[in-house]
Image 1 (tube, one colour):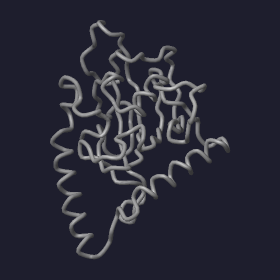
Image 2: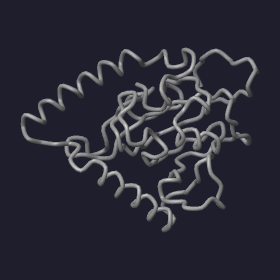
Image 3: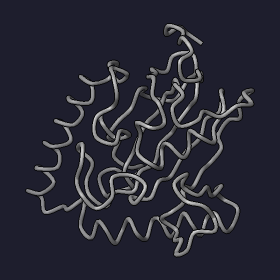
Length: 213
């Protein structure tokens, strides 16, 4: 379930779905072996396909399909910026919050993470999630994170979101896990997250216990 963490999420914030991810991950491994036996390669030309996907997101941003947000780690005046320095966002729901979390704030989120579409997974293989089925604010599983404990693209998204926002966030692999397999995520994997922000607490402020929305 370690799709969004840099290496290991700080503390015990991911307690809710570890077992379900292990089961899901094992099931996917078995499926992958079966696909190999049937000469189906889900990941042929994986880097090239993900590079092409990033360029498609950038083109979508140019046409107004997505909101384009530069990684927090760079400024617009930086030299050599490429499509991979941005995340590409679909704003599904707009919340009532007016403040965005900073790097070290605590944020309660629900999310689902996918790879880009493949033959067997036309909507993208789900590698990590806190909820199953259709998203529902009242029933979705949730977890507590801090932006500084997340991969760069997810961190960038959170630092622009508000309480009650729900976004679909497309993250180039450069702002995810890069060119090396890490924490169960394949190298060169663009990531797409469905992210909902339930609560935000400044660093040091006592957090509320989990409760139904």
